[in-house]
Image (cartoon, rainbow, N blue to C red; front, side, top):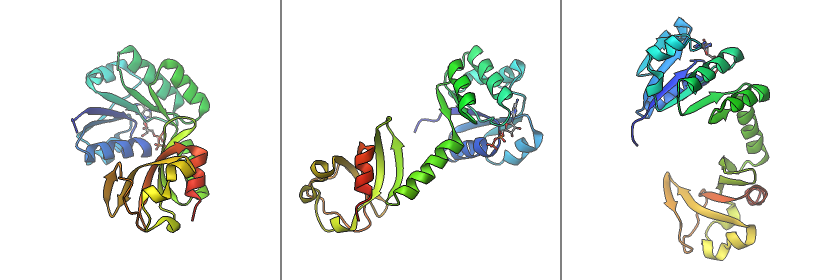
Length: 218
Ligand code: ADP
């Protein structure tokens, strides 16, 4: 993967997690926080971390904020600082801005300023937990649109030992299997003759209600 540069503004729990993961993946990461302790505590995780107030244009210019491929605004509780920061970034011509929103109103303001991607960590994680409680066989999912998902679903036991042709999952359940995960390997675009095994995880695509029905099979 090509190396990209990321600036993470706000090294709270969310910002630190984003920055750490990007750094682990070999990306160039600059952490920025107004709080000296946060910067010192995070030092070991990032390429660099600096103390700066992101609501000051001079501070953003001095770290060369315009040169980053992507800027993540991870300030949550201080809504005013979050909004001021995003407005400055927009004015400075930063292209890719991702911002965390605490709630709906905060998100709406960020949207109106033109933030490309707004994240609602609490809301999204809450929904994720509820969805997994409702559908224990569904391990992970990506929302493609309001109606369509890609989901990882544990193979219903009754389907083990059969191949995709006999199971006819697409016709019976309106769900397409795009990959099978087995013992850490991924079989992409599996052939109709592929024999399914107990413990297989099916990567499926389909309408949410069809996927929910499929994930409820035993
Ligand atoms: P979390 O819930 O992810 O821990 P917080 O909103 O509590 O998020 O933390 C946000 C971080 O943003 C804090 O570390 C805070 O010091 C930092 N922060 C707040 N305002 C600014 C600012 N103007 N410039 C830089 N960092 C800021």
